[in-house]
Length: 215
Ligand SMILES: N[C@@H](CCC(=O)N[C@@H](CS)C(=O)NCC(=O)O)C(=O)O
Image (cartoon, rainbow, N blue to C red; front, side, top):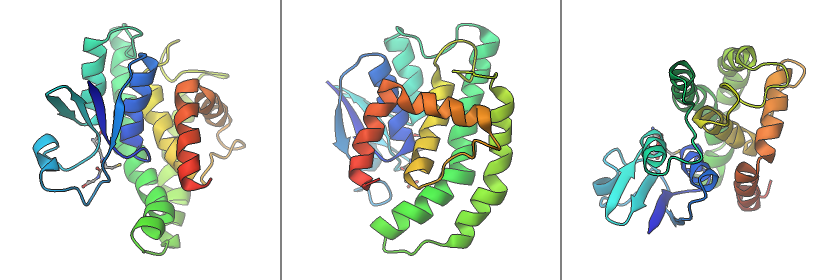
C-alpha cells in the first residue's frame, strides 16, 4: 500500500506525485497540511514537513529522498540520466529548484498571494512579491534560459528527468499565484514550461489543483 502524506498544492508533494505517475504507480493521497501538523506527524517527518511517502510500514520524508528511493525500487522508466555527468546536472537542477527557486520565488509569491490571504488571514505584502519578481527570480530564470537548447524539451540530455519534475513543479505554484514567465525575455523557458505543463502527469495534477484554487 502506497501513500503520499501531504497537500496537493505543495511543489514538493507534486514532485512525488508526478514521479509516481510517470512510473505508473498508484497511491493514495493522505491529506496533511503543513505548518500545523499534529505532534505525532513528527514521528514520520522529523522536520515536520510534507511530503512523507509511505509503503506499508516504511515511511520516508523529503521529496528528493523519496524520488531517489522510487528510482531504486522501481527503475523503469528511469527518471535519472544514466550518464554520470548528466545525472550530476539533474541532481543539481533538482536542488536549484528545491533550494533556489522555492526559496527566492515560490516561497515569497505563492505564500504572499495564495497561502497567506486564503489560509492564514494575512494580506499580500506587495513589496515582498515585487522583490521576488523583479530582483530575486530573474537571475534564476536567466540561468534556466541558458541551460535550455533552442526548442529544448528537457533540461538535461534527451530525457525527462528529476530536473524537469523539480523545476516545473515550482513554476506550477508560481502559475497558481498568477506569475507567468515573460516569453519575450525568457523565450526558451516559456516554451519549455508550456510543453511541461501539457505533459499528462503534470496536466492531470494542474487541473485538479486549479479546481481547488478556482484558477
Ligand atoms: N526538502 C523538503 C522540503 C519540503 C517542504 O519545505 N515542505 C513545506 C510545504 S511546501 C512544509 O512542509 N513546510 C512546513 C514547515 O517548514 O514547517 C522536500 O523536498 O520534501
